[in-house]
Structure formats: C-alpha cells, structure tokens
Image 1 (tube, rainbow, N blue to C red):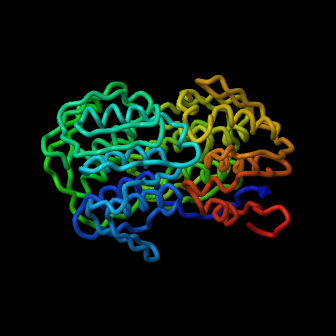
Image 2 (image 1 turned 90 degrees about the vertical axis):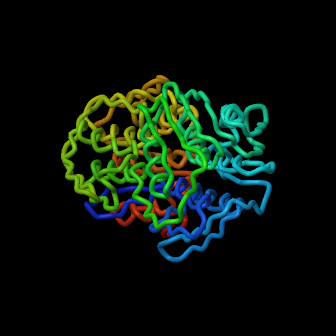
Length: 423
C-alpha cells in the first residue's frame, strides 16, 4: 500500500512519543529487579515490544494497563530463545543480560538487524567470562553465563550499544569489573544508561567515558519510572513545524541526556525562532537559511535535517554521516536516492550530505527502504513540495513511532491511503 502526504503544519500542539531508547533500558532493569516496577507513559513501538517480549522470555511477568506497564522481575528463563525483532540495541543489551544466566540462550532477530555485525558482542561477552557464539559475526547469537566480571577493553568507535549491555549486566557479576573504552561514540547514550541504572539502585563510576568501574554483587531494585519523551521522533515534528506554520511539542525533557536534543541547536543554525521550557519546545515560522552541522554524535538526526535543508535558502551541509551506512538502511544512499526522486538537489559523499534548498519542487513517488527514519523524513519533506509525497513502505515508522501519521495529521497535514479516505 502507498500513502499520500501533502500540506504543511498549521501551528498545532502535539505530545512527543515516549523514548524507545529509554524504554528498552528500563525494561531490562525491571527484569533484573525483584518485585514489580511500574513504567509510566511507556513506549509501545516495535522495538520496545521486542524488549518486553525478551524480558518475558527471560522470566519477567508483564501487565499492560492504559498508560503504564507493570514488570515483575526475576531472571528465570522460560525460553532458550529470544527475538529482538529489528532492534540492534535489543540484541546487544539483552544478549548481555541473558549472559548472566548459566544456560545457553539464543538471540535472533528479523529484517535489517540480520545484516548488522555482532562479532564484537561475542568478543566482549567472552572477555567478561561468559561463553558466546555467532553466525560468522552475525545473528543468531548463542550466549551462556554467568558473566564473571573482571577487566575488559572495548572499541567504542562503531557503537555504544555493546557498552550499554555490559554496563547493565555486569553489576550482577560476582566480582567488580573495570572497562576501558577507546573512542566512544554517542556518549550521551551512556549517560542515559547510567541514569536508568541509578534510578533502579545500581551504580557505575564513569571516568571521562574511557574508564568505567562497575562494583559486583549489586542488585537492581523495583521502582516506578516514567519514560521521557523521544527527541529523535520529536525532531521530525519540530522540523515540520519549521517548514510550515510552527508547532509546539510537549513531553520533551529539557535536561535530557538524549543526543538528538541537538536538533534545537541545528534549527537555530537554520534561523528558526525557538522557545524552550522545561518540558516543551515551540517553533515559530520564519524564513530559513542554509546551515552546516556535525551529526557524528547524533547520526539519527541526519534524516530530519535533510528534510529541514529542503526548505532552507541556499546550501546546507550535514557532516559526520559515516555511521549512516550501518543503520536500518544505508541512510546516506537512501536519502540521496529518494530526495532526488522528489526533485531536491542532494549529494551523499559518505562522510557528509549536501542539500540545496529553497525552492518548492513538484514532489512525487518514493519509498522508505524499510527504514522508519527515512519514512518520516520523506513525509516531512512533503511540506517543501507542491504536490506532496506518495510513499511506499510507510509502515516502517512502527519501529519507533507508530503514531507518527496520526500526529502529523493532527498538525494539519493531509495523510491518506491511496484508494481510501484515511490511513
């Protein structure tokens, strides 16, 4: 099925979706805690549901009620296999949690996660005393604990997700652990990990994101925890508001560690008029100009920033895009291919994306490449086109933001299935 998206934002107010990144960490922490933890305003996107399913397979009891999820923890696996869906974080986080158990457990997934390299998971888990095997460096993984702790060295260049998994699992080890990490990427995600752990009663000492000390024999405590709004998903709403007649996005924690909070600085570079509070962001409509921004610390911002650049006068340059190749799609290539179909001038140089904006093009037909962020970026770009966008593979948004099309319709855009009145 294809979706037709047209129009522009009309200055409405909308609530940011809950963060799947925070949700997955909270689910893992609740699994490892004795007693019942309550997660308020939970994320129920596909990646979060996969995390809940893995927690249940590992022994948690889960109840979903209106705006909360109740998780009664306990690592007593009910199944020897876990399904991470398409979640790269889910694989790397829950393989480490599963390695605290003394029996063999298999972790597999679907879709693009099957193409993501997992050899480092094996390397780091075995370095911390567990047993681990992969399928020639890819899924499925097989792990067997328990993690014994100790000293290990990690290369953090490609991802911080390996480190997140170890940080959350190693407090259960019998001895304390010392992790030394070279060239850690996405440091803010480690801040999120440590913040969630602290809320559940577990401590980590972080020395300048290079040396981490994790005391052993710790225990997670059950607690109440509210999932904060997702700056990654909100970035698309804020960009659409900047391209249209403004927007207010609520449920955005101003003090968040999420790296995609950088969208505020990027919008300001493009000339946007921004008002921030402790829990919301207002974008006012003004003429936009070309900008240059480095997304190496927040690569998920590249798709919404490409959409933003289409509505800016002049040339915009988005640098630090090397890691886009190993996302749900090769995002640099996908952005270049699809935005060119719509008539926009964009060049992918591997390490940067260059976009010439400022003129409304006709629009046209494009595809998501099975990537939620490509789907949302193309939908937002409809505001910079005359006739809108016809999008196939639109349902990829369910991975992180299942309510995306409802929200942009609420903000004034026209969203219709071809042949039907509404999605």
